[in-house]
Image (cartoon, rainbow, N blue to C red; front, top):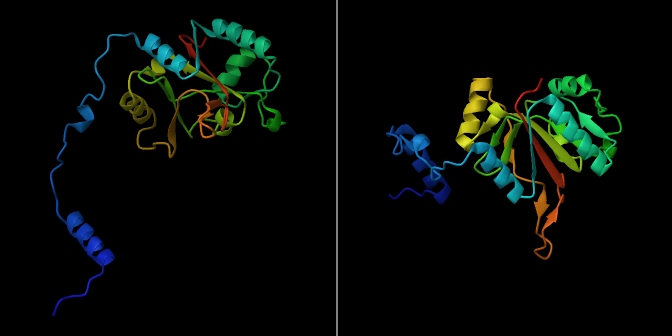
Length: 214
């Protein structure tokens, strides 16, 4: 007598059988395989080119003084008044140079700028790697119209896999539950195929690469 098995039960049976059978990894060297062609371009230059190509803004700073001078120039150009920063290390830097900002989420609905750090900068595609482990959370990188990212030169890597290595070395077994990448300002072309910046998040992204925070 033939057993009456539904297609769902048959599929689950195959899955259980596959789980019980131990097989060798068919691609043992996959993580070491090069996905992109090798390049001799300097990572800083490559990142700047790729970020600019997706409408982002790249600013290299030699030190904290250079950073504050550039930040003051941007604040004056855009007439920023509601600038928010919630990460202690960045707060200390801004406070040292008496740059005005909001330490709490008071009147956050009026926020014009969010200043955050990141996990890594990915040179290959001009992306910023972020996680939920920083003090800024997700709001500062999503809600304000302008997002400013601060990174050290040691956080600039060539590919995504290098960014994940930085995170693994930093957090060990306590890997953040949310890891994401930001590639340029928020954008959409859903309406009549017309590209609109700032549709679902910041319309301007500024990435500051600082060689020395002091």
